[in-house]
Image (cartoon, rainbow, N blue to C red; front, side, top):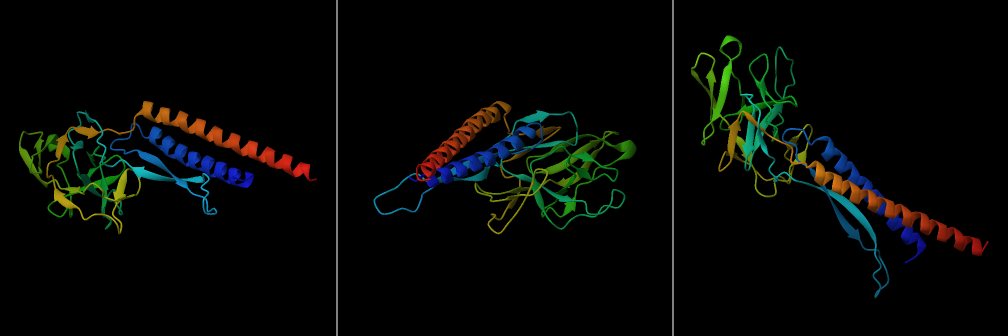
Amino acid sequence: MSLFAALSNSISGASAQSFALNNISGNIANTQTAGFKTTETHFADMLAQTEAGTQPAGGVASNTRDTLGLQGTLQSTGVSTNLGISGNGYFIVRENTGTDQSPAFSTTTAYTRRGDFSADANGYLVNGAGYYLFAGPSASAPVTVPTGANTLSSLAVSPAGALSGTAADGSTVPLGTLTLAQFGTQPNLTAYESGTYVANGQSETPSYGLNGATVTAGSVEQSNASISDQFSKMIETQQAYTANTKVMSTADQMLQDAIAMYA
């Protein structure tokens, strides 16, 4: 392997570790974000093009892999409008493209596990990231709850997805059917923003319903990021980065020595 190849490999290694650290920092920052799913870094070796019979080590490429299928812990919040998913599925949400006084909803459907919903001034259920919950057989209608004197004291979701609430006067208020979007083992969703995901050309077609999943009212799914796990990965990443910079400086010094020999 030439010194130039050593420099190239160490540069790609340092770049890959920088990429990993960026993902780790995002995971650590979101350990307390409801419904957050960690982003893992995967590495792949890049083989150098060489003459037949030789196969020196090449550089490294980095890429991300989501952990959408990794369940976070459900935590009771005592907030009646909070919802937590156990199992496969995503809340179907949309952005408000209007105003707080006159809401209008985006035509772009997004999916999220973030269930820290609360009622806005108009009675719509909106999560902490500002996305509004949609329900019904085709998830075409925003969920609304009573406001004012007869506000809800609790919510309930049946195994079939029937969403209902108990009002302050003790009456039961039907709120429609809570629909989850459910994908297979490889949903291939694209991360959008604030813990939401959108479909792309490679995404599976979702089915709608609960189909084995449960939704618990008064709870939210916590982030699946572990502080201890992310700190361990950060230390490993720092060590790998330092090692690559050491190779870089050593190869550079050897190259300078070689040049000096012929100067």
